[in-house]
Image 1 (spheres, rainbow, N blue to C red):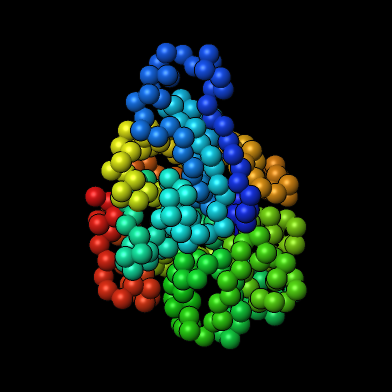
Image 2: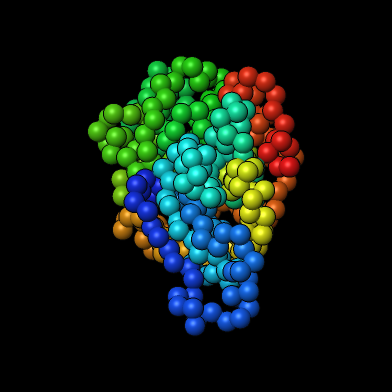
Length: 326
């Protein structure tokens, strides 16, 4: 099985990335004109630093946002739930994270959100449940009664786990799900505080390289095969107030997505450049599994997320994703 890893999402620090050309005399007339047309050229963007965000990191490293007259302050996020809190309070302009958390917030009416772009579609070996190499747990049925870590309550990793468990005749209710940040999962696994860990890339590949963890099951199967994982979101009020800024962001992001989907080397360099920990370096970047990075939005594909959420009880009633796209 291929090694994988995912960008460490556990930073509380803010990485401020100055994506302007620097001083005023470094900007040509065209860029000055572009900036003048934007309602808000300085953006604070919260992104969960995993391979789901590869298009954003490529655009950031290559100066594609700068070319659109945007200055980006990038804030690493530990979970989409935290990003949503910052977004609704006005701290973040744009966030990236898993659709499950965004849809839950919209359904509860705790936020009025708009999905502006897709970030990633899961591929084989990109999300996996791991155990220690000497663990007695060898098959999924042995997880019954055991502690399985996910990074946030009832998010996409929980949904992926639940779907695969049910496919194998195991009720998710028999699993003790524990909330553990990605960066702490391996430590807790080693100290026997949890029995298994749900890891995306590049955390997965890093865990394989450093600890030799064993893959119990790939989550890219059954109802969640090729599953839409993450997207970029704004509040509806923000999108209505900043249409030109939003259009500029999307132009740059689309270029980053296209590069990420066709040029692995660019993804590796970008992920290394914005890593938060030294142990996510060139070796991990070289072996991590990548997702696919679509352009635009496919409503039918995204509706799958809401449908599976309803199937597994994360939504009390059917939800139309269209309300988050208009």
